[in-house]
Length: 433
Image (tube, rainbow, N blue to C red; front, side, top):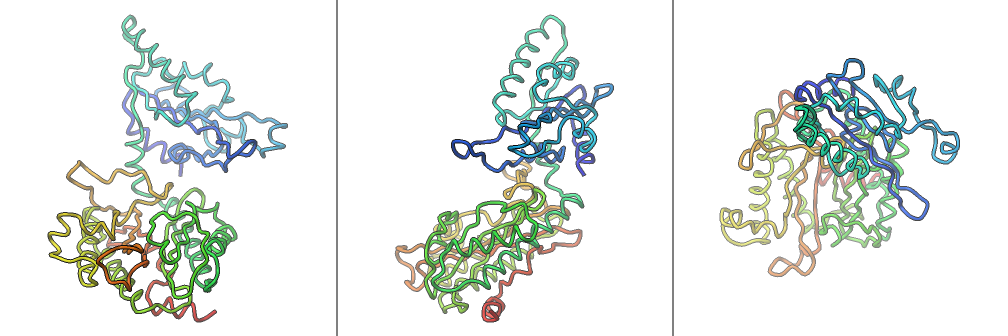
């Protein structure tokens, strides 16, 4: 997979150019404990290599070594503490590098890959030590170019090229995303069937996260959100520490990560297994919108169309519930709907949960859907406690319904449809346990 991706990237590089990508060092969590390491997504996308403090050089015009890795060398003492390293030899054998060096030889060897280049692709900001080295060499090249007429004269961020590439998933990427989605489905169902009034939010979080790991996920794609009652009106609620009261809804936003690819699903359900009438009214409104929004997705349609549809449908719904008053057109023009629906209806999904894809052609125009794109659709309504001039029965209700959608040749496929979302299906599932 990664070789094909590198070749695609090389085809889009300017002639006479070199690209350098880095994996950052580990980050400390506290005095002597490191955070779990996640490789830079673009680095991983091009190489499949996951170890920290590594560097990838892509030099299409080099006579022998067009793809080079600089990696941590084998070190018996370090590996006792932190686990086995790939090492220099296996960087070539297992990851297809034409040549590999120990990471501490980067300064010594990088010059021979840059000496004939005119353009350097490099993203500043991921590794301060390498940033300093690159900038120093760039400044030196600019000065010497005045005398020699040779050397790097342009520094370019490769992210736009890779962002465009990552927008369309290949078959292996789709396999990993499907697996991440399947595991995500299992985690949500585990939490829904375990939920009972009086439990704490963190207990349901534990059901979700344990299911992810026991099903083969690397872990969570992002910190699991379990928001009960009024907590669900905070979009990125993080505490997960409240006791769940009877007759309240629980909103769970969670996704598994499988081989670096992400799932992302939200379900909202009654902790006691039965929706109240007020909860049903908001929930059904969001669910109906959810289905209609997904139905807009097909190749050739603007990527912005689902969001515009969500604004239209949810605004009409808010008016019908008495959350807003006035004319729908004016409410949309003045963005008054944002009091209860304050974000875009979806985002691209892949190596990142909010995948770094540029979905616009220009400031005014969006790209259109193409087969192989994967995005979330997640309409919601959030009526915070204390909101004035709304029916009291809706106060403290937050509902979000989110699925992961693959754009196909003929339309779309809902990858996470196996998590119940119809009111009857949710209530039936929760009664079975």
